[in-house]
Length: 266
Image (cartoon, rainbow, N blue to C red; front, side, top):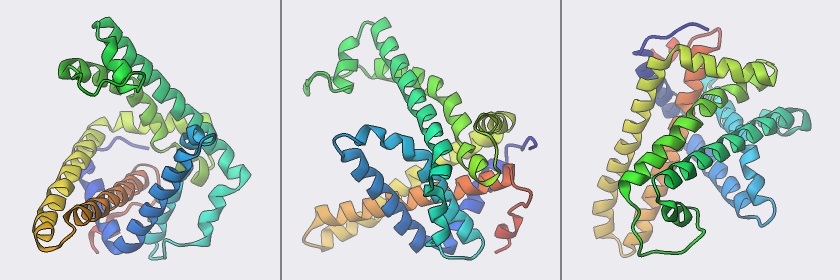
Protein backbone atom coordinates (compact mmCIF):
# COMPACT_ATOMS: atom_id res chain seq x y z
CA UNK A 1 0.00 0.00 0.00
CA UNK A 2 1.70 3.18 -1.23
CA UNK A 3 0.82 6.86 -1.42
CA UNK A 4 -0.83 7.85 -4.69
CA UNK A 5 -0.48 11.26 -6.37
CA UNK A 6 -3.50 13.49 -6.86
CA UNK A 7 -3.85 12.68 -10.57
CA UNK A 8 -4.66 9.07 -9.73
CA UNK A 9 -8.07 10.30 -8.57
CA UNK A 10 -8.91 11.10 -12.21
CA UNK A 11 -7.39 7.78 -13.30
CA UNK A 12 -9.74 5.84 -11.01
CA UNK A 13 -12.75 7.69 -12.43
CA UNK A 14 -11.58 7.05 -16.01
CA UNK A 15 -11.02 3.35 -15.36
CA UNK A 16 -14.41 3.07 -13.63
CA UNK A 17 -16.19 4.60 -16.63
CA UNK A 18 -14.34 2.26 -18.97
CA UNK A 19 -15.33 -0.70 -16.82
CA UNK A 20 -18.98 0.40 -16.82
CA UNK A 21 -18.99 0.72 -20.61
CA UNK A 22 -18.02 -2.95 -20.93
CA UNK A 23 -21.41 -4.11 -19.66
CA UNK A 24 -23.73 -1.19 -18.79
CA UNK A 25 -26.95 -3.18 -19.20
CA UNK A 26 -26.17 -5.84 -16.60
CA UNK A 27 -24.72 -3.30 -14.16
CA UNK A 28 -27.82 -1.09 -14.36
CA UNK A 29 -30.07 -4.15 -13.96
CA UNK A 30 -28.12 -5.26 -10.88
CA UNK A 31 -28.26 -1.72 -9.46
CA UNK A 32 -32.04 -1.79 -9.91
CA UNK A 33 -32.21 -5.10 -8.04
CA UNK A 34 -29.89 -3.72 -5.34
CA UNK A 35 -32.02 -0.58 -4.83
CA UNK A 36 -35.30 -2.53 -4.95
CA UNK A 37 -34.23 -5.13 -2.38
CA UNK A 38 -32.96 -2.55 0.10
CA UNK A 39 -36.06 -0.37 -0.38
CA UNK A 40 -38.38 -3.32 0.27
CA UNK A 41 -36.39 -4.48 3.28
CA UNK A 42 -36.38 -0.98 4.75
CA UNK A 43 -40.17 -0.83 4.41
CA UNK A 44 -40.73 -3.95 6.55
CA UNK A 45 -42.30 -3.03 9.94
CA UNK A 46 -39.93 -4.95 12.25
CA UNK A 47 -36.90 -5.75 10.09
CA UNK A 48 -36.68 -2.34 8.35
CA UNK A 49 -34.42 -0.65 10.94
CA UNK A 50 -31.91 -3.51 10.62
CA UNK A 51 -31.52 -3.11 6.86
CA UNK A 52 -28.44 -0.91 7.32
CA UNK A 53 -26.61 -3.92 8.77
CA UNK A 54 -26.66 -5.50 5.30
CA UNK A 55 -25.21 -2.48 3.48
CA UNK A 56 -21.60 -3.80 3.55
CA UNK A 57 -22.81 -7.07 1.99
CA UNK A 58 -24.62 -5.08 -0.69
CA UNK A 59 -21.45 -3.12 -1.43
CA UNK A 60 -19.49 -6.37 -1.65
CA UNK A 61 -22.00 -7.88 -4.10
CA UNK A 62 -21.80 -4.82 -6.35
CA UNK A 63 -17.99 -4.83 -6.27
CA UNK A 64 -18.05 -8.56 -7.06
CA UNK A 65 -20.11 -7.74 -10.16
CA UNK A 66 -17.46 -5.22 -11.18
CA UNK A 67 -14.77 -7.86 -10.74
CA UNK A 68 -16.77 -10.20 -12.98
CA UNK A 69 -16.88 -7.54 -15.70
CA UNK A 70 -13.13 -6.94 -15.34
CA UNK A 71 -12.65 -10.67 -16.04
CA UNK A 72 -14.99 -10.42 -19.07
CA UNK A 73 -17.59 -12.59 -17.33
CA UNK A 74 -21.30 -12.09 -16.71
CA UNK A 75 -22.47 -10.12 -13.69
CA UNK A 76 -25.08 -12.80 -12.95
CA UNK A 77 -22.78 -15.42 -11.48
CA UNK A 78 -23.66 -18.10 -8.94
CA UNK A 79 -20.42 -17.20 -7.15
CA UNK A 80 -22.29 -14.17 -5.80
CA UNK A 81 -24.11 -16.48 -3.38
CA UNK A 82 -20.89 -17.00 -1.41
CA UNK A 83 -21.46 -13.66 0.33
CA UNK A 84 -24.74 -14.85 1.87
CA UNK A 85 -23.42 -17.78 3.87
CA UNK A 86 -23.42 -17.37 7.69
CA UNK A 87 -19.61 -17.34 7.76
CA UNK A 88 -19.43 -14.56 5.15
CA UNK A 89 -22.30 -12.52 6.58
CA UNK A 90 -20.98 -12.37 10.15
CA UNK A 91 -18.09 -9.90 9.61
CA UNK A 92 -20.13 -7.86 7.11
CA UNK A 93 -22.97 -7.46 9.62
CA UNK A 94 -20.39 -6.36 12.19
CA UNK A 95 -19.28 -3.70 9.69
CA UNK A 96 -22.95 -2.76 9.34
CA UNK A 97 -23.16 -2.24 13.10
CA UNK A 98 -20.08 -0.02 12.86
CA UNK A 99 -21.84 2.00 10.12
CA UNK A 100 -25.02 2.39 12.19
CA UNK A 101 -22.94 3.65 15.12
CA UNK A 102 -21.30 6.20 12.79
CA UNK A 103 -24.70 7.46 11.58
CA UNK A 104 -25.88 7.70 15.17
CA UNK A 105 -22.86 9.76 16.22
CA UNK A 106 -23.27 12.03 13.18
CA UNK A 107 -26.94 12.57 14.06
CA UNK A 108 -25.97 13.42 17.63
CA UNK A 109 -23.43 15.93 16.31
CA UNK A 110 -26.06 17.58 14.10
CA UNK A 111 -28.51 17.72 17.00
CA UNK A 112 -25.85 19.18 19.29
CA UNK A 113 -25.10 21.96 16.78
CA UNK A 114 -28.79 22.83 16.44
CA UNK A 115 -29.08 23.00 20.25
CA UNK A 116 -25.95 25.15 20.62
CA UNK A 117 -27.16 27.69 18.04
CA UNK A 118 -30.61 27.73 19.65
CA UNK A 119 -32.55 26.20 16.76
CA UNK A 120 -33.77 22.93 18.24
CA UNK A 121 -37.08 23.26 16.37
CA UNK A 122 -35.29 22.73 13.04
CA UNK A 123 -33.90 19.43 14.28
CA UNK A 124 -37.37 18.34 15.39
CA UNK A 125 -38.71 19.13 11.90
CA UNK A 126 -35.88 17.29 10.12
CA UNK A 127 -36.19 14.23 12.35
CA UNK A 128 -39.98 14.11 11.93
CA UNK A 129 -40.75 14.76 15.60
CA UNK A 130 -43.04 17.64 14.67
CA UNK A 131 -44.92 18.46 11.48
CA UNK A 132 -44.48 22.08 10.50
CA UNK A 133 -44.47 22.31 6.69
CA UNK A 134 -44.77 26.10 6.69
CA UNK A 135 -41.75 26.64 8.95
CA UNK A 136 -38.56 27.35 6.99
CA UNK A 137 -35.24 26.07 8.27
CA UNK A 138 -32.45 28.63 8.41
CA UNK A 139 -30.01 27.60 5.63
CA UNK A 140 -27.01 28.81 7.66
CA UNK A 141 -28.01 26.62 10.61
CA UNK A 142 -28.63 23.73 8.24
CA UNK A 143 -25.20 24.16 6.67
CA UNK A 144 -23.52 24.27 10.09
CA UNK A 145 -25.30 21.11 11.25
CA UNK A 146 -24.58 19.28 7.99
CA UNK A 147 -20.90 20.25 8.16
CA UNK A 148 -20.63 19.02 11.74
CA UNK A 149 -22.31 15.72 10.91
CA UNK A 150 -20.07 15.25 7.85
CA UNK A 151 -16.90 15.85 9.89
CA UNK A 152 -18.03 13.25 12.42
CA UNK A 153 -19.03 10.55 9.93
CA UNK A 154 -16.12 11.05 7.48
CA UNK A 155 -13.51 9.05 9.47
CA UNK A 156 -16.00 6.18 9.82
CA UNK A 157 -16.69 6.19 6.08
CA UNK A 158 -12.96 6.14 5.41
CA UNK A 159 -12.62 3.12 7.69
CA UNK A 160 -15.57 1.34 6.05
CA UNK A 161 -14.89 2.19 2.41
CA UNK A 162 -12.69 -0.80 1.54
CA UNK A 163 -13.27 -2.96 4.62
CA UNK A 164 -15.88 -5.30 3.03
CA UNK A 165 -13.62 -6.55 0.19
CA UNK A 166 -10.55 -6.59 2.45
CA UNK A 167 -12.36 -8.93 4.85
CA UNK A 168 -13.90 -11.13 2.16
CA UNK A 169 -11.28 -11.14 -0.61
CA UNK A 170 -8.05 -10.68 1.33
CA UNK A 171 -9.08 -12.60 4.46
CA UNK A 172 -8.15 -9.76 6.81
CA UNK A 173 -9.47 -9.68 10.39
CA UNK A 174 -12.16 -7.06 10.90
CA UNK A 175 -10.03 -4.63 12.91
CA UNK A 176 -7.13 -4.89 10.44
CA UNK A 177 -9.42 -4.29 7.45
CA UNK A 178 -10.90 -1.19 9.10
CA UNK A 179 -7.42 0.13 9.88
CA UNK A 180 -6.04 -0.48 6.37
CA UNK A 181 -9.10 1.08 4.72
CA UNK A 182 -8.68 4.25 6.77
CA UNK A 183 -4.89 4.33 6.37
CA UNK A 184 -5.08 3.86 2.58
CA UNK A 185 -7.40 6.83 2.13
CA UNK A 186 -5.47 9.00 4.59
CA UNK A 187 -2.15 8.20 2.94
CA UNK A 188 -3.48 9.11 -0.53
CA UNK A 189 -5.83 11.87 0.65
CA UNK A 190 -5.09 14.20 -2.27
CA UNK A 191 -5.99 11.51 -4.80
CA UNK A 192 -9.20 10.72 -2.92
CA UNK A 193 -10.14 14.40 -2.75
CA UNK A 194 -9.82 14.60 -6.54
CA UNK A 195 -11.76 11.34 -6.81
CA UNK A 196 -14.55 12.76 -4.63
CA UNK A 197 -14.70 16.01 -6.60
CA UNK A 198 -14.87 13.98 -9.80
CA UNK A 199 -17.76 11.89 -8.46
CA UNK A 200 -19.69 15.05 -7.53
CA UNK A 201 -19.04 16.53 -10.98
CA UNK A 202 -20.15 13.26 -12.58
CA UNK A 203 -23.35 13.31 -10.51
CA UNK A 204 -24.28 16.82 -11.61
CA UNK A 205 -23.39 15.97 -15.20
CA UNK A 206 -25.83 13.08 -14.97
CA UNK A 207 -28.55 15.41 -13.70
CA UNK A 208 -27.87 17.82 -16.55
CA UNK A 209 -28.06 15.14 -19.24
CA UNK A 210 -31.15 13.66 -17.61
CA UNK A 211 -32.91 17.02 -17.88
CA UNK A 212 -31.57 17.54 -21.41
CA UNK A 213 -32.95 14.19 -22.57
CA UNK A 214 -36.24 14.52 -20.67
CA UNK A 215 -37.24 17.92 -22.03
CA UNK A 216 -37.93 17.01 -25.70
CA UNK A 217 -39.47 13.64 -24.75
CA UNK A 218 -41.83 15.31 -22.29
CA UNK A 219 -43.07 17.55 -25.10
CA UNK A 220 -43.60 14.63 -27.49
CA UNK A 221 -45.40 12.07 -25.31
CA UNK A 222 -48.75 12.24 -23.53
CA UNK A 223 -47.45 11.15 -20.10
CA UNK A 224 -44.67 13.65 -19.36
CA UNK A 225 -44.45 12.86 -15.65
CA UNK A 226 -43.90 9.15 -16.22
CA UNK A 227 -41.35 9.82 -18.96
CA UNK A 228 -39.45 12.20 -16.72
CA UNK A 229 -39.48 9.77 -13.78
CA UNK A 230 -38.31 6.87 -15.97
CA UNK A 231 -35.37 8.83 -17.37
CA UNK A 232 -34.46 10.13 -13.92
CA UNK A 233 -34.55 6.60 -12.47
CA UNK A 234 -32.41 5.23 -15.31
CA UNK A 235 -29.85 7.99 -14.83
CA UNK A 236 -29.71 7.39 -11.07
CA UNK A 237 -29.15 3.68 -11.59
CA UNK A 238 -26.41 4.44 -14.12
CA UNK A 239 -24.74 6.80 -11.63
CA UNK A 240 -24.95 4.14 -8.90
CA UNK A 241 -23.39 1.58 -11.25
CA UNK A 242 -20.60 3.95 -12.25
CA UNK A 243 -19.89 4.72 -8.59
CA UNK A 244 -19.36 1.04 -7.78
CA UNK A 245 -17.22 0.58 -10.90
CA UNK A 246 -14.97 3.47 -9.86
CA UNK A 247 -14.86 2.16 -6.28
CA UNK A 248 -13.76 -1.26 -7.53
CA UNK A 249 -11.04 0.26 -9.72
CA UNK A 250 -9.87 2.35 -6.76
CA UNK A 251 -9.68 -0.76 -4.59
CA UNK A 252 -7.74 -2.65 -7.24
CA UNK A 253 -5.31 0.21 -7.73
CA UNK A 254 -4.69 0.73 -4.01
CA UNK A 255 -4.70 -2.84 -2.68
CA UNK A 256 -4.49 -5.46 -5.42
CA UNK A 257 -1.20 -6.71 -6.77
CA UNK A 258 -2.32 -6.38 -10.37
CA UNK A 259 -2.99 -2.88 -11.64
CA UNK A 260 -5.72 -2.01 -14.10
CA UNK A 261 -3.69 -0.17 -16.69
CA UNK A 262 -4.95 -2.65 -19.29
CA UNK A 263 -8.40 -1.03 -19.04
CA UNK A 264 -7.02 2.25 -20.29
CA UNK A 265 -5.77 0.55 -23.43
CA UNK A 266 -9.17 -0.99 -24.25
